[in-house]
Image 1 (cartoon, rainbow, N blue to C red):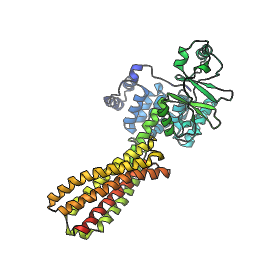
Image 2: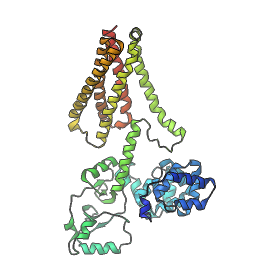
Image 3: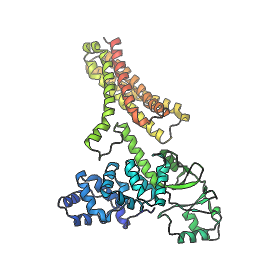
Length: 458
């Protein structure tokens, strides 16, 4: 499968102009096909995908019908998942099967991997056998694995030939990938034994053997490897590309840096969404989909809020005797919650980048406790003195200060230990950590402040 590139390199890097959407909408309102073509003819596939993502869903069909004759297959790989499925239905399975053959295998797999099984099979059955088998090879791997990321378009050569023979072969071969960065040397069983950069080949004399050009250790990627770990390998070894091997070590594909950029973007966005309790929601989701995705975590938050309220209810008599407690107690819980969220953010990010590992668990936990203790003491002094003068009660200031230190320390400990526990259990730390940390800081904050007040003030 071949990768289609834009014709105008300058246009590829021109920032997308949001005002273009208004012009497109005006043209759609007046059914002006010629204007739509004029507006989009020099745009990159990514820009046209942005237009489709941003215009009202009711206009997507009209827009697609206007540009269908000049439809760039790469548009499909750039679309949001929900809209992509709608566009595929509009284009029809036969048309999509035809354009998929013009994409690199990794992009083609990205386009169809999330479709319903029935639609996926219909499209695959319309693709010639060789191309279909290439796609099925990737689709047979788990969704978040290296096998789904790889392209099966790569260059592999015999290590015993020389540079001149290699260059002549590459010039005569009409089935080369459009872009590649390394040449892989393979043995008789198709196992990769070395990787040679194109720059190294070009700088070498024609008589030099390929196997003498190996310049760095060969880093291979298992097709089953999780894509986050693949990205970690690229970052760790400064890779531009890497060969993908199957269970017996045979070279089956290649992953390039542009694939990893997508992984990093997706994983960062996924963690932010999970921390916010919105799952895999996209801005293109409709009201029902968005509401359904948020409801479960809001419901869990409701349960934890009720738990915190029950703690407050234990001290209703204490609060009745000293109204100042009702005014001040949200401060303790809020400060603890923010401190816990800070620690949680660092922990989740560090787990994602493999900077937080069992070897340094103890040191990082102690560090977070000490940081929380120091901040707790500083804010305890500030709020203790402020509340003492505010309500004319130095004992109240002392109770608030002690409760602040206790909750900040607990918040720091919870913010680091909860993600570690969830990670140990095989649960994504970004998925549920924030709910647990907030619950802990609310319960401990209210209980410590009101409990101390019941002992020393009432």
